[in-house]
Image (cartoon, rainbow, N blue to C red; front, top):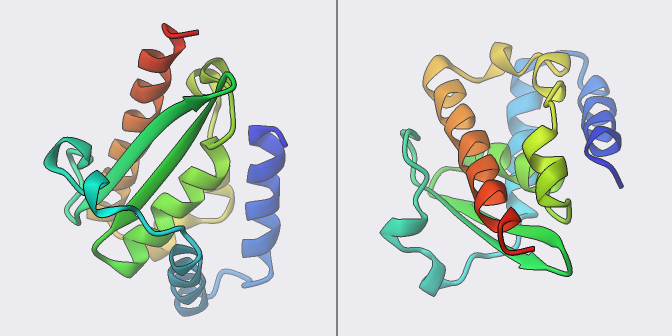
Length: 140
């Protein structure tokens, strides 16, 4: 599935919540619970995303020309946020990740139900994923 098709799915999922802030936060936490566990060996300082108030660990590896991301966080909502990015960017080519425009953030009205601090952290997660894509692109 393409980055845009996955974003459209996320928009559809959130549209069912009709902008309800509490339900959106609950749904985000549920998304985080579905994220596969990150191994203890990957919970290192070098895998922490800089710029996040919560701890967010992010790894990336190249498999068959596509990047597979794994992530975790020490807070439920932040784990839900990073799980959406993993869903959008995982199993995509480095080029698609680098050039991918994320429009789902605005369409689901995310700024309404997460604060400025989390928005800044979310931006840091996106930046880190694109940096991994740039680095891994050189290995193709």
